[in-house]
Length: 148
Image (tube, rainbow, N blue to C red; front, top):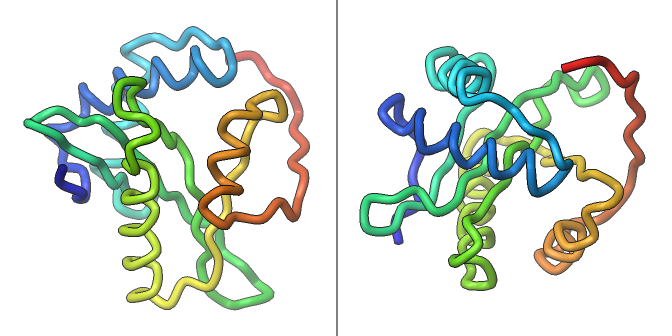
């Protein structure tokens, strides 16, 4: 297994994973065109974020997208984990842990103080994974529901 930054040539595989993630985590159906556009936008504009992927025999088996939030309290960026996904046959095999380890290494090099994520409140499986790797629940997230 190789852990690496995603490239533009990964756009289709990441978009397909995002479709699976949306269905599995929030029972949302998103179109391939929307997913492709969103992933391509991040891969082409480094100011939006970046993806770290886990690759096995040429296939992307896991991914995490990092986006940025400016903290006026810290006067620096914080990172948000988004689109965290591992394909079902590769779960419970350390893929997610290796992705997070790489992100933490990069964050340390860039002097990032905090990495956060949000999770749907019904996604108990994901919550247990995050707690298992040492993440702490400190905030609740509220939103204005809008049509997709």
